[in-house]
Amino acid sequence: MLTSKFGIEIEFTGITRQQAAAAAAEVLGGTVTHEGGYMGIWQVIAPDRRVWKFVYDGSIAPQRKQGGRKLTAADDYRVEMVSPVLTYERDMETLQNLVRALRKAGGFVNSTAGIHIHLDGAKHTPKSIRNFVNIIASKNDLFYKALQIKPDRMRYCKKMDEFLVKKMNERRPRTLEQIRSIWYEGYGGYTTQHYHDSRYHFLNLHSFFTGHHTVELRGFNSTLHAGLVRSYVVLALALNHQALTQKSASARKPQTENEKFSMRTYLVRIGFKGDAFKNCREHLCKHLSGNAAWRYGQVA
Image (cartoon, rainbow, N blue to C red; front, side, top):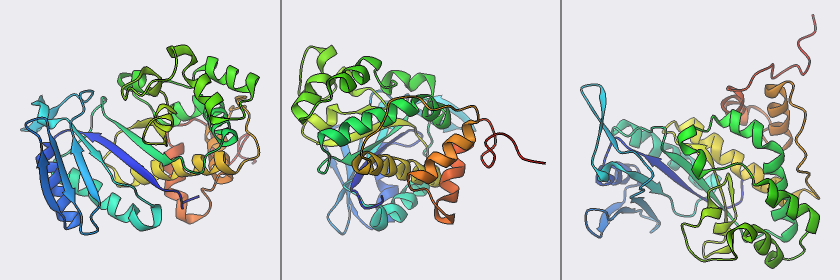
């Protein structure tokens, strides 16, 4: 579950891109460089030559703190950290330390900021992509409540398109070209345009069919809480592993009369087992109603 490569984009404000790069360089022991002018990219080249970028994102409402108050800030306070290719075992501790350093430096998030996780698409097949579509469709409502997706961000991470899900399961595509055709069917056909409307869903396959060849999950509010970031990454890796290894997946929505129990048992089933993932389970269940231990209420 934890062996797949991934990348993460974390949006925040409170400090400038230059300040964010300086804070990251302290953690990474890297060199700060700058490309372009006022709206340019600040980046940190780590000793292993991997590059962590701090870029402009126009969807973020820039803010700064002054005297305990949050004030509107200039555009250089729109910050998105873009990681290099990462692996869980090698890089999770570093990623969490970076998140803590950015918060300590004054970074914070607001309702306009999100987190996007890109998963390596190299092993995906037509079957696994269809599995992924059905997994997300079946858990749409549970995930959106568990992750507390902000109304300000819904336009950037819409729920799975019911038209897409229906067509995917009616036609049962056997090639990636057929899946690509279905994905773009409501948008006038395939495009290489980066900021294409099809990408703004919890599950984004536009990134898979363009140069990045990654499956992107966009359904996370941004946070500079290191434990939450870890929980989101583990969830993304677990969903990816489920899609790759499960023989088939249904888009049918499960019964969720007890949301916490449904979510906990689902998380355990896809790999969140034991004390190592206890905190992750707690983070992902805390906003749900019900009892995580008892499906129908505790027996007296």
